Structure formats: structure tokens, C-alpha cells
Length: 321
Image (cartoon, rainbow, N blue to C red):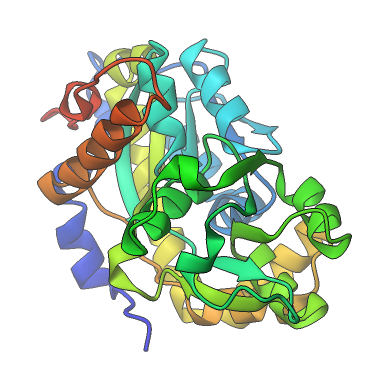
């Protein structure tokens, strides 16, 4: 059964993000004229927050004139925009921030939430029945996506190395066509594409993130300059996202309907995805940092990223305001 935070638990979990009521009375608090939020249609919590206008209402009360929503198709381009200062805040899986930090992007981890479930999938009639059977096979996933990490970790569980497979870097849309066309042997992907592949295309699961050894987190990432200059606005936005997350956990059917409307993906697939999702948001903990550092070290050792990084160097803490 999925664990959901009630409002009391959530309030305690976000204590480090700072409650900012009454900031309008403090003239010294710096506030931007506009906050720019990057989102993907599949990021249901941000789609919900956008629809409900909760961030707009909160920031307007503080003195921020507007919120601009900028859509991205994939996590890595969103982080490129964050690093370039074209976006102030967005959410991605665990792997894009590793690539971004290795590339010198000017961003910070601002908050953490559980990742969507992911799976290693094969066609229904595939001779592949275990992770060990992936040796020498074409395995598709998005380069720099959370599925990249799941792939590496799943291979390690089977005693395989990354170069034991033929990695095939594809977006979910391209991987769907390749999977159904028989052009790849396996596909590693997150919900709702995981749900779609099983329900619509008869994909078979050989491993998924219900195995705690494969689980990870997703992150809200902010531009470092935005987080440094406007901590009050960032904290307020995160607090509203947290409240929206709590609401979503208690209203999964409504969330599935909204996500279906936003993406064109059927309600059934979203319902399946949200039924196994965990809805919570909180500060980036030492456990998150250790998990991300292990991922970064693994990728550096494999030559996937070019240099060693220290994840703790880009973790933002809300100042006492």
C-alpha cells in the first residue's frame, strides 16, 4: 500500500524549507518580478499545480507579479535551460542532475520526492526471462534519464557490466516504436510508459523498481542564481508544490483524469501508474545525497560522465528568513 503524508507529517518534513507567511511585511526580502517553472506534461504534480494556480496565488501574495510555465519534452533539456538561467525551477529524475553537474551547470537540488516506478521490459514472446539474459542484447533507454540509472543498477544485480549490453539511446516515443517493431530486445522506462507497454502492448516485466535495490528519488532543481537571490520565492513555491503533492495522494482518480487530459495518454494507464506511486515531498536529506553520490561515482567509473563530482556541493538549504 502506498504511503501518503498527511498535512501534519508534511509540515514537519518541510520544516527545513521554511514557512514564509508574513514575508510581505519584510521589505528587505528580495523577490523577482516573475518566476519561470519548467515542466513536462508527464509531471502530473506540476500540471496540477499549474491548473490550480496555487503557486501564482502564493507568490502574488508575496509580491511576485507572475509565474511563467515553460514546457519541455524531456528532463535533460529542462536542466540545460535551468543551468543557462532560462528557467528558475523544475522537476526531473535522479540521473539528469548528475549529467548537469558534471557539465558545470549552474543549478542546485531544492527538494526531493519518490520517483515514478520504472521497469525493465521485454516483448511478450521474448526468450529473455532474467536480467542475466540481457548480455549482448540491445537495451533501449533515454540517455541521461532516470532509466539510465535503472539500467546500470539492474545490470549490476545480474553481475553484468554496462558494456555487456548494446545500449540504445531512445526517447520514450522512439523506444515505443522500436519495441513494437522488434528493433530492440529490451526497454527500460518509467511510468506511465511502463504501464502503457504492459497494458497496451503486452510487455513482460523482468525487473522493476518495486525491488528496493533499484529505487531512487526525483528532485526539484533550481537555478543556483535564482535560489541564491530569491530564497523566499523558491521556498514558497516548494511549499505550495508540497501541499499539491499531499492533495494528489488523496485524489488519485482526479489526478489520473487531469494527466490524461494533459498528455493524451489514457486514464487507465495513469490510474495504474498512480496506484503504485508514492506522493510525498521534503528536503534533500543525507540519504538522498549519498544515493546521488553513489550514482555519480558509478557513472564516472564507467566513463558515462567525464569527471568526479561532489553532489553535496549543489544542495540548497533554505535560509532562515
